[in-house]
Amino acid sequence: MMFDRPSRIAALAAFLALAATLPVKAETAARDLFGAKTQPSAQGSEAYGFYSHGCLAGGVGMPKNGETWQVMKPSRNRAWGHPALIAFLQRLSREAAAEDNWRGLLFGDMAQPRGGPMKNGHASHQIGLDADIYLTEMPNRRLTDDERDNMDLPSVIDPRTKHVDERRWRPEMLKLIRTAARSPEVQRIFVNPGIKEKLCKTATGDRKWLNKVRPMYGHDYHFHVRMYCQPGESGCEPQESTGGAEGCDLDWWFNVALKPPKPGAKPPKPRPPMTMAALPNACRSVLAAPARDGGTAVAARRASPPQEMAPSDSEVPPEAPQAMPAMAQTPSPLRSSFAPVPPAAVPIPGSRPLQ
Image 1 (cartoon, one colour):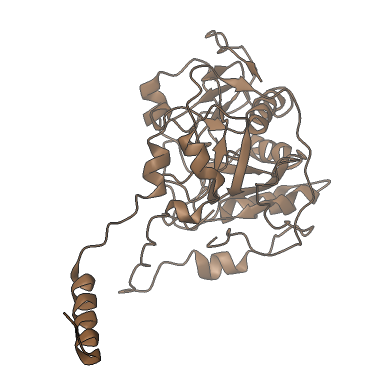
Image 2: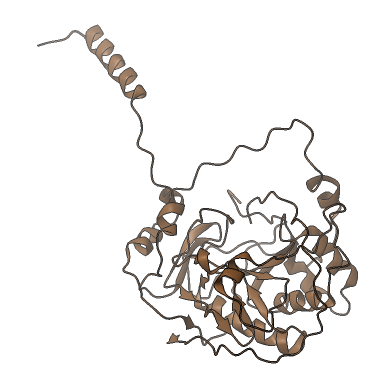
């Protein structure tokens, strides 16, 4: 049957109108795909993409217990990372115990077994080079899994003033953050603006390390360490340099950013979930790779920082081995001068933009 041109145009228009009414199959969110993986990929260790748009091949797990650390929130299964991150955190915990008067460190979220976007809690932590370290000292006993999942982690920020609560602040906190920031592997550290202010007011001597410590929403009961992309890993996208300034001008944070929203202001519209199309192509291979079962591992090497990108004031990412057995369960009698920590305040601020 032949149709004249007007009839063909009318038929095409009718087809397009019908197609517009049909449901479109939504692509599975990348966070669901990566969140479903309970083991790392059986690949060589490598970070792909940016800290907030990437994944991790060949991730290794942080041993649950060490003489100078314990891993928190085990039910989340986020204590995985690049071998360089795992090695750094273990070394930092030993240095903190030996030099900064910490009994030991409590480690929070690192990455999922294969990195990638998470269902909640973080926009970054996707390539195995980010880790949260609590400002609560490790107890002198091994915590149960239930305690690790539900332990009270007090904020050091006064919710009324947005500045440090002097009843909770300890000089050891400055020492620990300074030790982490002076490490050449560390690219930057995120802390609450109130903590940054306290560091700026009390740091003495060589203050160059302050330029790595960047103010960020949240981060009032922990600090977030970010490592450089590792040498030779061309698929990892570096972040802009922190430059050399101390970054102690915090007027914008206290006068604008931390002010409560105006009455009746609409909350920002949530962004749609990230799909695989937003991640490097290599992440598809990471997802499809067979699992590497069992064990945790640690890197023997100490990573050195690669060349940075040009300096920038931006803190928000664009958008924004050898098998190692768990350490003995007997706690080490390391010294500590920490006084008992008062009951927790509500952590503030509540909003958490991209890290």
